[in-house]
Image (cartoon, helix red, strand yellow):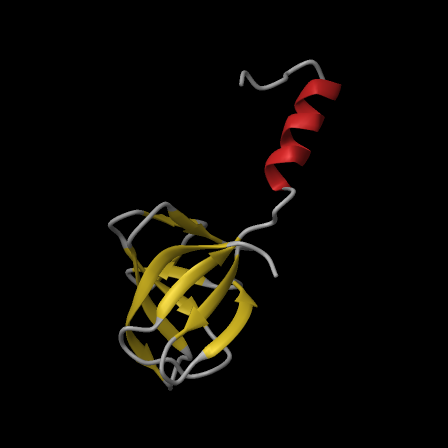
Length: 106
């Protein structure tokens, strides 16, 4: 199982558009992220394939902002949104940096 980090909370859901309005509580949310929706009526993972703010497509949403995220399954208010982390992501970035002469300072 991959580590997960709380990123936001569902504020509302529209069955007509299949979009969940998510408040980003910590960090940021961006297209391509894999998120885990976990609540009383939801427990599933999926990639962020559509992200909107004020009905306009965006690439990301930052802490304190709200954004609409397309979901395949209904979710309810209060559902937690967790960012699924790749446990090797930091190690891979450091190795690539070292290979290309841009190592990280630790």
